Length: 98
Image (cartoon, rainbow, N blue to C red; front, side, top):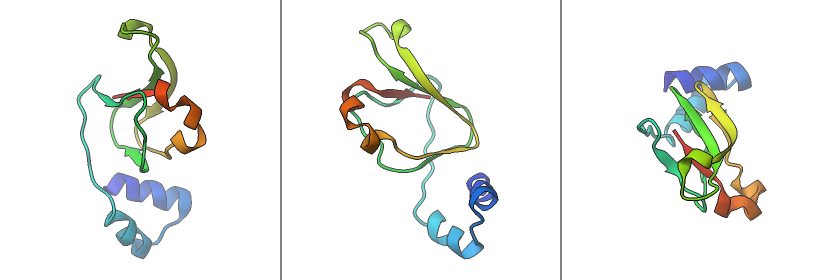
């Protein structure tokens, strides 16, 4: 959690009091390499901070994972805001893999 506190303090100048409120709403999740963490049609409903690793955002083209279309990456020590409310027409097609 120290990593996200440093990130928010550096980029947004939050106070320690602000951090205590934010941290009380947070939780940690761990995923295995290549694990799909958001299937096409799923919805992101919270902010995400990636402490370690890389996330790949993709659109599956068929049942074969080798032909997925990658449209974005998220690298460690970054914050992500859900995009689904901005792109509702694409929900059935987007996926997310660790």
